[in-house]
Structure formats: structure tokens, C-alpha cells
Image (cartoon, rainbow, N blue to C red; front, side, top):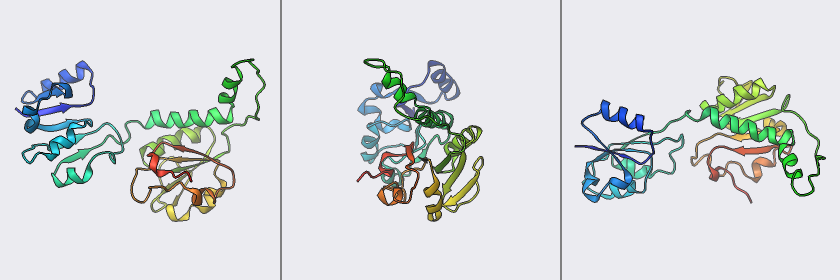
Length: 235
């Protein structure tokens, strides 16, 4: 009987639903898998160190990997491709949560929340060491106009921000006031108050946010990286 290796936790009712819909499959947690099971695993839900072990076996039967993240760069993609294994992500599933986290970060800065919290420590001095402002009228530059970028653009627009998207060709995207191509960002970098990285990690985006890019800015923008860490280079 084929096995689905459940590396990602699920709710009991979700597991029960899967078992009812697919009675010809076994759904096993990673701690229940033994070496005798390895060649029966055809589906991996989530990511687990056993993936490399399975792929290294010439008799492995793995056919499909489903992860719960948008990015898949952490997977052994070349090995998966060589083995003919299909990979699916969950692009967009975290769009609301991530975009709200970005708004929280920006509001924390402009409204002085972090400074206010720090001032409540020790002597509880309440005077803010900064001048607060608002997001209204500020420019938000979002690299990546996919589902996360669009969700953030919609929310930021509702707060009165001017939202510009950066994508490969500068093609229009929903909820953005305007978009520009990767090759035409110098003018919008010069006016950006906030920059958000919502790009996948690829050879093109590796170390994209570096000293040369920030040399084009004029407003001392805050970078919020909701993509991959290696997209930024700090030297």
C-alpha cells in the first residue's frame, strides 16, 4: 500500500478526511516511518530530512512533494527533477498574514511604537525621542507583484500610500498605482520611503538588495524583506 509521509502537522479532522477520501493509502508521520517503508513512500507532505534519503535510493517510488511555503529553493530541486518528482507549493496562502506583518513593521516605525515601548522600561520616560509621522502619502516600492505583493498593495493603498510594483517587464498588476521593470527602477528608488522584497530567491534576485541599489535611494528607505535572506547583501 503506498505511503504518504506526513512531515507537516495536520489537524485530526484533516487527517481523518484524507484517510476517508483515499482509503488505499497509508498516512504516516515521520516518526512512524521505518527503513522498510522507504520504497513505499510516494508522496511527501511538507519537508523532512528523509527526503534526501529517499531520493538517494535507486528503488525509491517518490512521485510528489507538497510543501506549505511559497518558496521552494530550500528543496534539493535538481535531485527532484532528475527523479521526475513533481513539486507543488502554496503560493499566496500566507498573503494576508505576511502583508499585515509588513504594515505592522511600517506602522511601528512611523508611529513610534517601538520607541514608545522602549521608553516604558527602566525610568519609564514617556517622551518619544523621535517625531512621528503617518503612512499617508508615503511611497511604498514592492519588488514582486504576485499574490503577496498584491495583497500588500491593496492594504497599503487603503492607508493612503502610493504603491509602486517592480516586476520583470513592468506589466500592470492589480492594486498597484504603477509598475516598473527591473531595469527601470532608478527613479522610483530615489523617491521610495519603504522598500519591500516579495521576490523568490533565484540567481537573478540573489544579493539584489545591495550597496549599489541603496546608493540610488534618496529618502533613507526602510527595507522589509519578506522574501529570502540571501536576496540582501550587507557589506
